[in-house]
Image (cartoon, rainbow, N blue to C red; front, top):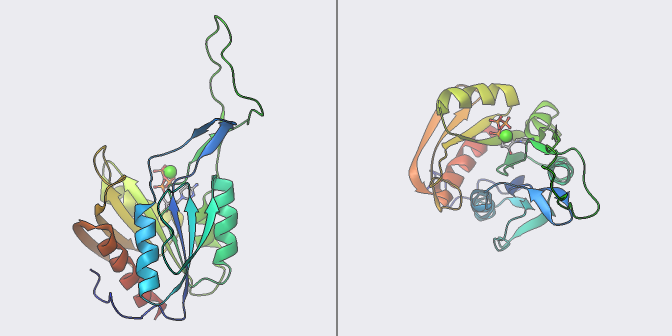
Length: 225
Ligand code: CTP
Ligand code: CA
């Protein structure tokens, strides 16, 4: 577990956590989605409740049971997630973006189910960029001293990509993990390194997502002072 797990070091603090993965609808029955289950974000919410925080969990298409003691708000798309996070972040001491956010959404939503055309190849799917929620909340902190944490799943050059991403996003901490088909998604364990804007790196050995959650809160609590 983290060094200070079991302490009430987040008492009196409001923390916001997003968890799960966005779904961007194409038509009433189809969407573009990802493999995130929400496990890491839910572990973060449970750990924060245990450490005394008031917790808002923005749950995005996750089937996991509501963590006891957290306020759960639901969102489906990146646009809904952005709205929910910005609203909850207004009085938050820390915001953790553990959700997997679609970078793109379909440019058009079909009101009726998209049908095959006899003998014709499909049209290419037009996509547009989604807003970058993490970059936005990092740039416009709702409160002075608010701590913002991002997550990054990388497949190659994990540390170099993580450092560049931390700088680009402007957040305080970036939890970087290596993903592959059998790593991270839907599993209960994780291996990561937490990169901080002050240059420090905290390796987290392979272990339960609960342990990574407590390490994240150790680093957040230290920065909240
Ligand atoms: N994120 C976000 N809004 C987006 C995309 C990502 O808030 N539109 C957040 C995620 O919740 C995560 C962090 O940014 O905390 C990093 O996500 P990632 O997909 O790794 O970053 P990208 O900038 O989208 O980089 P890439 O091109 O590698 O996907
Ligand atoms: Ca992305």
